[in-house]
Image: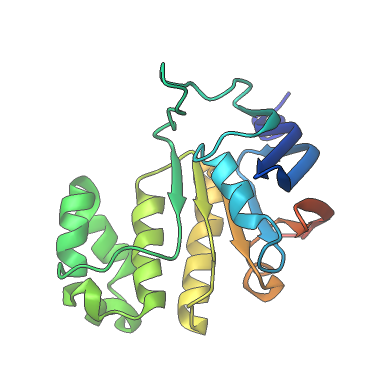
Length: 222
């Protein structure tokens, strides 16, 4: 079996309930390595719950979720030990007085010069390099976090509310970087959005959620 065929996540009879009410219920689904997945659906469809489950942030009420053929390790208190190679990113955070350059100098010291040359050398982004992150737009802040996530070389990159605050330039740039990471590094990327528009240019597989259930799985040629 080739590497791409070995699932990185396997869900079976997986249910998440709050107060006795099911908010996510998936019979069986596999996520494969080196693939960009998009999860789309309206607010309340279960997108964030699914991402939290895959990121080890919550425990299923019933059923199982396997990561690389094994359940997540837990502490003696029952809390999940989230593997370091799984990186979760949402649309919050990142507001600091540090400049973008200072952020990357501390966050990725070994990749600092590479990040500057690869992500901030072009005129469209060069001015961002010395700016305080607190002065950036929400789309620019998200791009900073996407870059930090990609360059930390995760095995799995999970992103909620993808594209929510992007302009066309940031959208094209992030889509290209994410696609390259999946193809060249084998990163499994899982993105969620309420809009198919934000996912169709980057995702190879789009999963539609409706009331906590998978209603459609669509493969997009890339």
